[in-house]
Amino acid sequence: MGAILKREFAAYFKSPIGYVFIAISFLFSGAFFWLFTLSVGGTDVSMVFLGMFYVYMIFVPVLTMRLLADENKMRTDQLLLTAPIGLFRLVAGKFLAAYIVFLLGDIVMLSYGVVLSFFVSVNWPLILGNFTALALIGAVFVSSGLFVSALTESQMVAAVGSIALNVALALINVAASVIPVKFISDILKDISVFDRYSEFTTGIFSISGVVFFISVTAVFLFITVRVLERRRWA
Amino acid sequence: MIEVRNLTKRYGPKKAVDNISFTAEDGQVLGFLGPNGAGKSTTMNILTGYISSTEGEALINGVDILEDPIKAKSFIGYLPEMPPLYFDMTVNEYLDFVYSLKKCKMPKRSHLNEICEIVKLEDVRGRLIKNLSKGYKQRVGFAQALVGNPKVLILDEPTVGLDPKQIIEIRTLIKRLGRNHTVILSSHILPEVQAVCDRIVVINKGRIVANDNADSLARNLSADHKLVMQIEGADEDIKKILSSVTDVERVFVGRQIDEKVWEYHIEAKEGSDVRREIFRKLASRNYPILMMKSNELSLEEVFLKLTTGDEYGGAEKTEEKFDMLEKGGDK
Image (cartoon, rainbow over all chains, first blue to last red; front, top):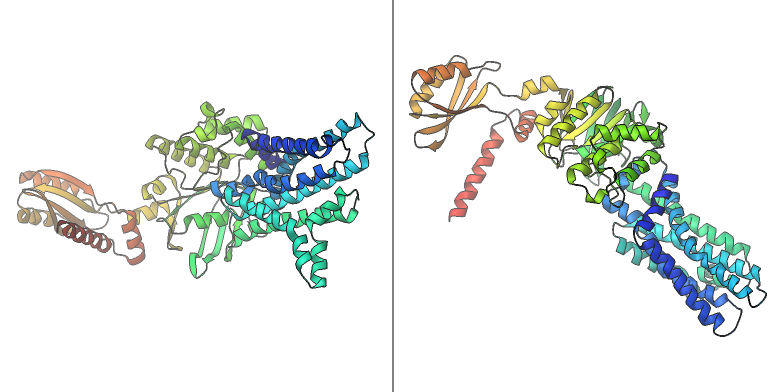
């Protein structure tokens, strides 16, 4: 796992992708912070965190599109799958590499709390709660992107596919509101990634939300392993 | 040591590998010979655990590749048909990566130095893999297989795309490695397999058509007693002379090469050598020999011989087809 993590992480900074992703994180969060907080003279950062949900929904796939699609295309999967290493460690290494790059972009969110602390007394638990939620939603998007990347040989297809998947995940709450059957719409509401996330931005630290995000990530990593496994048996 | 028992791989109704069994002992180089699409790569991918078999089992040093894949894989160094290289890494970085991927325990620096020396990579170790020539990429792929000094080496067409000098180097290397490793290599080039391997498994359409040690297979397949000659002079007369040579069984007059020059196919008794007598007889009658060579079998003819016992039929049919094509083209 360590070898793959190290290689993938280094690869992000050999190509522009790692830098571009971090720059996008800084740019959008900075713009949102200025737009929604500083320019109105407020101290509320919830809109910044809400905005970053959409930014990461679109841009985390840029980070993950290469991970397995490129291995499939370049046939380097033959090296990984014939090495004495389990599939889960392989997938975990890839996931962690992308996730660390994500966190490097995400960490900037904390600096806005520091900026505010010069002017007012900051509600740190709120900011940390929001930060945790954003970090967890990042894990969900990285794992969903990794899953789609395992399905294809083309990075482009992987990127578009995982954006579509992320949008679908985010829109579950919309589906929930239009389905008239209460039983189904309740279930959809419960698994709505966006509803779970927006709960955090209103200042509620929901343990069930944390468990939910970790579970969704685990499910995506699990089915990624199954995809790799299944290809062997095809 | 590799044991393969009744291995079958099915893709839908098609059998890519059909019930094959063979054994490669320690310190043996086993050659896997077959035309493109015969199932060589599929078999190798099964042995290395990249894909699974539909039926049958493959044991690497006694460990079943499906039951304990991680342990079985730790015995194997694999060079696939297309070397699995990361183009954004330098050779050093790549070998470091493979070293930790395979969880090697050997002293890293000296081990990797040794490998680079063996496959002659010293000069390019700091260069990006994407900038290397095809031959060097192949060598990096080879180096990757050697990392961790695995007991079993599986090499899928290791000399493809190399220039003749490199091919000779790689063959020498494989022979050297064969002394203390089990090596399986695949090829569709008969002389290559003959030159390197102790044992040859011939595979065609997913089935094993021959499995023998290299010497006896070569003896069976070689055709020193069959000659092709070009001789200048009256064809009927020459045919008579050739037929009169001891041990010669059949003489065909082939195509006309030039005015007064014909091609002759001569079949003598197996194991006999009629070349000297032919020379003397023709020389005494003043018929110059323009060409004489033993009729080596092409791979296609080898397959025909192994599968049907007839090595001329196929070749002639192909020639007929070419003739028809040419005639068609003239119109």
